Length: 594
Image 1 (cartoon, rainbow, N blue to C red):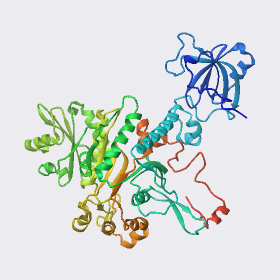
Image 2 (cartoon, one colour; image 1 turned 180 degrees about the vertical axis):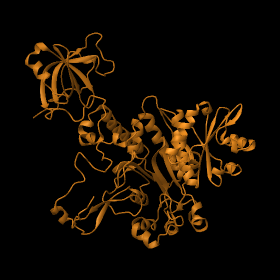
Image 3 (cartoon, helix red, strand yellow; image 1 turned 60 degrees about the horizontal axis):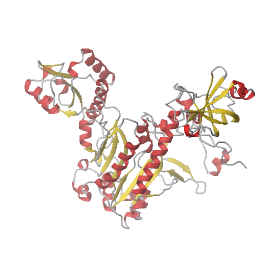
Image 4 (spheres, rainbow, N blue to C red; image 1 turned 90 degrees about the vertical axis):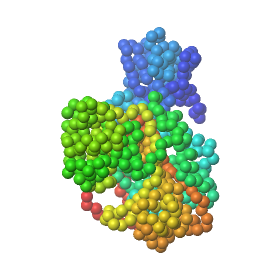
């Protein structure tokens, strides 16, 4: 029987100068072999690190054996730990003061297919399709290996903090019922119930609320979620994981007071060297202010630019192009000193984005300049100065559109572009904020119907009285998002736990009580037996680690992600199944023409 030290006595990152004189056995991947004229250097790598092993040509057959080893073959090496010759130490390696003189090499697994489709020891970029098809090789690269280790450490630290705060980790079902809200479900046909389907959970939303009804008070879970939606840089098709949290007997600030320190501690602990993190408490911004001043409900606060509403000022001007429209302005400090080509380039960019252009005025000690300045009298120009806090040397850019929502969207895009072009976006920092007071309802696509703005299970501010007596479009919800560097980490809410309020909330959105009973029966019935006020949120694990790893795509921090077409190129999913399997599931596949 092989004992624990059969393959290795130490890992490749374990040995130090205090181990000089020991005979050791190491195991790992051959990272690189360098022939220095009669002297072979073998860099051996395992999960823990790298160590240099050395062999002289006088070793005879062993020298030839080692010379023939291929990169990434798996070996076990036995040898003596010695100090590296003076001036050859490598301070960039933890094992850089020592090396191992090779006495014996066992080839445990050879590389059979010649050239590796993904090279491990180079910084070259490889096509994503190749990387995903050979993910096990891609994960050997240091950057990817480090990202997955980071992810594991982040999850462990989150668990530790939640346990210390008295939360219980409870697993909720993977096979559940389909929900009419949210993204498309992944459906699983039932073999024992012909014609009926399970759904993979888009989130544990209803189950975690039922746990509060059951009296568990504080719940969390590193929860797998499944949504059949299109891929984005910060969203993977198929599955993702979220840090799911729910608490009983809480108001909005109670949730914030728990979640903020957990996120703060996590980002402080795992941030790259030199990165700063927003101090506690995180900034609170209402949804209305976020859309006005940042043009987005997930603002990147590293960009200091602020948008202002100047519609009223232009309504009193002679500039016909802005007449009757929503107008927003963005003041860029010191931008007036830029050359004409700077402004022309921005104007061309705006046209390429489908805008009529990007108007501006500049202010200096000689007055105002720019294509729009002549349409404004001195009094209106001075109003712009006050509203936008302009100083000499500043440039004020303008955006307009027919609707408030479209103007906000465009202004947000322009704000980001101006921040990038002027280089004022702060680097090496994590800027957190809460977005609060989301609207409960909004107009539907037809411009007439009332639909839920976001989460239908949020408690409306003002409760039943607001639902009965206020204009639905004026009702706010106890709903909030946590945002970091322009990335929405999580939505959350204080939940609607009162049956009468829930029925009324759905009625306003056009749903009958029968619909609520049919589709959310388990939850609404549970509330009829007494439910504590409760709320929570669910920050995305993938997005958190993406930010901490300082990468732009969550596939860089996911071990085995799907590609942008929701395909697993490594395992060949989705795949065709046999007629026998389909028959067991009472299914028949119709021919599909692409």
